[in-house]
Image (cartoon, rainbow over all chains, first blue to last red; front, side, top):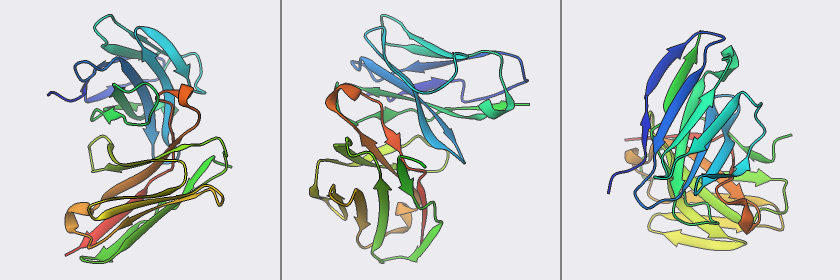
Length: 113
Length: 113
């Protein structure tokens, strides 16, 4: 069974640009969540989608957005990039509604110059 | 103050040692407690999952939760070089929180042959 796939793995952007990251969950998993990982803050929850609906949202500014498609694939977008957005963005999928059993992808490492 | 506190280490031990990793938390609503392991350049993978207080054992790994003290631990017996990774504690509140986990900063562990 294929794991969670995230693309692109690495990318470099400049301040003010926008970026779109993609995530393909494990087949059959309907929940997709996104986390930001930085050395100082650790993993922080961005948002979660379940059956194309945003079910939960973390404390990030509106520049961070996401969506989920009917095949459960998800994208997240960050507009007007800032230097502080440099991070590893992790996508996780789950087939269990209410537990912490998440399956993470390897992440998309974003560098903002 | 962070909701979940975890000593980032680094922690270095000889092969065969018993390793103790700990997290404290402040949110008494947390009911689900997890330990994730993250190898370098990889996404986190679920190692242990416990609900409420008590102990759970899986091979060389034992997870303990003490809700009265708001303290959780992970013990690794007979540690191996392959255990070298960053260990992240994670917690979740009520069932409706879905995939919204609150993570500790992670403890970097090195097991030396």
